[in-house]
Each structure stands twice: as C-alpha cells, then as structure tokens.
Image (tube, rainbow, N blue to C red; front, side, top):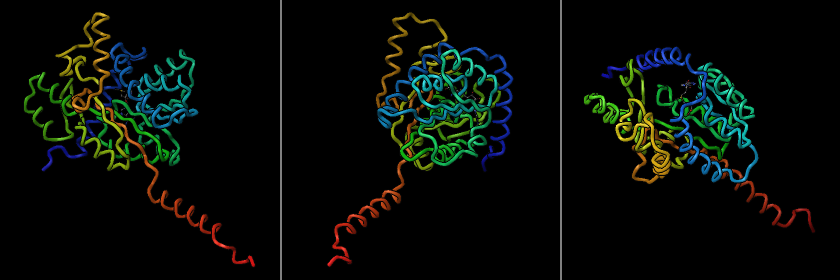
Length: 308
Ligand SMILES: C[S@@+](CC[C@H](N)C(=O)[O-])C[C@H]1O[C@@H](n2cnc3c(N)ncnc32)[C@H](O)[C@@H]1O
C-alpha cells in the first residue's frame, strides 16, 4: 500500500507553499548572483532552441509559467517577444515588474496558480512555454504539462526544468540520509526533508522525462543538465563547488564554460534537467491537407465534363 497517498502530497504541497510565501515576504530585490549564473546557462540552451525552431521570426507569444522574479521573462521580452508571466507569489511578481520597468520592457504579469490561470486561455495560442524550476514541487505536474500542450500552437515549444534523481540522491547523501537516498533511487516522487519541513517533490531521469513529454503529447527534442558540477546551500553538488563561496574571476569563467558544455554522458546529473518538447502538427491534419491537395490536383488535371 502507498504510505503517501495523493491527498497527503497535496496537503504537504499547500503547507510548504504557505511557508515559502511567508519566507518570501523578504524578497523584493532582484535575483541573486547564483541565479544570474544559472540564468546564463539556461539562456545558452533556450535561445539556440528558439532560433532553431522559429528562425528569423517576429515576436513570439511566450508564457513564463512560475516566472518568479522574471529572470528569463525579462530577457525574452528584451528580444522583442510578447511575454506573459504567471506566478503564485505577489512579492516575486512585484520584483519582476520592477525589473521589467528598469529594463524598459513590457510584460503582462498574472498572479495565480498555473493550472487555474490557464483554464480560460484559448487552445493553440502560445508559441513558447517556459517553466523553469517549478514543476518539481507541483504534485499535479502532469496535468500542468497537458495544459501547456493544449495552449501551445502546433510547432510550438515547451521548455521545462525538473529536478534530477541524481540531485536528490547526492543532496540526501550529503546530509547523511542514506535510506531516503535509496527511496529516491527507487521512486519518482515523495515527501523529503531537505531543508526544514518535509516537502513534496518529484524527480526524474532523462529517459523518464522523455516518456513524460510523450505521454503529454509532446515530441522530445532535447534534454540537458543545468548545473552539473556546482550548487549552493544544501545541494549535494555544493560539496564540489559551492557557488555561495567567492570564486576568482578566472575560476568563475572556467566553471561557467564547463557548465555550458552539454555532453550526452552528463545529461542526467544536473541540479536540474531542462527538457525541450515540441507540439507536432497532428498527423491526421497533415493527411487531410495532403488528401485535399491531391483531390484538387486531380480535379484540375482531369478533362472538364462540360468541355466538348
Ligand atoms: C524556484 S522559483 C523559479 C522562478 C523562475 N521560473 C526562474 O527560473 O527564475 C519557482 C517559482 O514557481 C512559483 N510556483 C510554484 N508553483 C506554482 C504554481 N502551481 N503556480 C504558479 N506559480 C508557482 C513559485 O511562486 C516561484 O516563484
């Protein structure tokens, strides 16, 4: 029998959201140096994927779901895209709004839960959905991705980052929680006591993420690790390089280059894994269009029944 039924995950998730909200009352400033470090690594994947999928295009309609203080939303708006950011927390949105204003860009910010906020949105209305470092604390992450699929236009992209199984195992081992680390190796979600209170988390391997994307209708395009050799705070990887500690400019630059290499053998070992998925044009639609085109061609090619 499952000792942690879904309702328990739901309850713990709500409780930890409230605790986080209370902690976040202190936010109001822009994001930290470490978030800036990982922002560059994210953008190093996100921007080439946008170029590859959309090429030289006019403004894309972008949703940044769980935008936080807007580190990615602002960068995409600076490139001329039409960005909407959704987040639960008013304090984060106020910080994001302030930064957007400082950068002279306009972003629509909406406060609320992703699933509830997206309910009224039209099908196939968004080109790009970004959802970074959010879904690993959402027990309804599968429904949320299905909703992203619904609002994405055919040919649109989803880019979401998830916690890797490796991350939680190394982090728990660093804290001496050996049995919990074994639990993580054998499951894909549960309650873990990483910082203070037991909190709901889910975690994945690269192949599991690809399966998840496919089950939600998306074609997997790429999966890469974000933060393979460095971390902060209680992260297992902070035992390798702790980004909260000062680094010389040369070390910082070399580390940044190392973290930006995305070799296939490193795919599953990140603090996060960034999965890219595409909403393909439905095969049925392609077949219908092709059949109609063939009918038209054969109609025009055949002799007219009214000609003598
Ligand atoms: C770690 S922050 C990441 C912020 C941003 N995506 C980034 O990469 O900078 C996670 C954010 O997700 C938001 N969040 C978590 N669950 C959410 C939900 N169900 N609906 C809306 N926002 C959510 C939190 O409020 C928080 O601001």
